[in-house]
Length: 398
Ligand SMILES: *Cc1c(COP(=O)(O)O)cnc(C)c1O
Image (cartoon, rainbow, N blue to C red; front, top):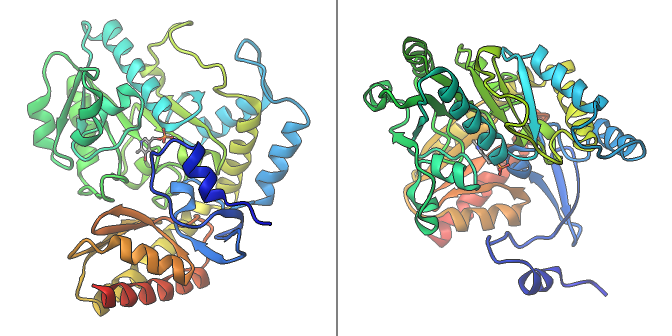
């Protein structure tokens, strides 16, 4: 007797996402298997989360050991995994302090609160934050308000105010939007959900200078780009800038749910009691995140990601050359997108699933590829061949 999990889902789970048809049961490295035993190359990695692959023994051991030791204490007490994680992240970044929470949107929520407190304390009560169109900052109300995509906001009106949205990769737009109420600029180093939009190599440096000249905080949402995805440990390093605040989540935990925001001492405006979290910084997820982060640093995984990213980019461009309907391929590190001249994403995803390759439907006319950072050359070769098959198949249905 096999359980019909899809029936159970439609009966019991709130309908908020159209799922891919397979029920995934286990994974190892870049591969996952469904309940039918079919194997897939996972080029979604849990939405750019499983940076060191599925079921990495380093994490499995850290988590199970911690589960036998201590799970949760609240932040009334000192706990070791939290402090080890804090130390390794601060020591390897340009930031001085960290607060650990549970997700990306919570990290952004915290960073926004920090900026508002900073404005109260240091900038005559300035509170407005400039963010970019096409950005994605999460699903809580403040993050929805920060997100520069109206379709995430309309049904939840009224939403919090205090955000000004400007075109991405346009320093003049930021300059024009700045006024005496502005306290911060908050941007993704590369826009992920918004379409893998890579800014001009000077953009973030220009933003840094503008923030310096006007006493604004530069906040980078590194929820998707952090921990090696762009080929450097933090995305800001790929653009040669030092932000005042960054937010992390997805890849930080290597699969366990965790987020964090980090700040320079000069931006740490909080006083005791201003912010907090019951689960934030708990021993279990911190042990997992520490194991993953240490693995990434010790093995120089970001450099591997940079090399594999370049290799995958070549593969994707070769495929583009073979198929007229592929209009663009763009990416950085191991975050890539492919665009089509029509809305063929559903057909491409279905054919890729059939061929044993999992990808993310980014737009009706675009897919996103973000394999674990530990992906091998051979796995990229196999994925490219499966993608080629899927495109040919989807085009036939065209
Ligand atoms: C995914 C994402 C978020 C939201 O993270 P959650 O953990 O889903 O709350 C925020 N910002 C960026 C850039 C993201 O990619």
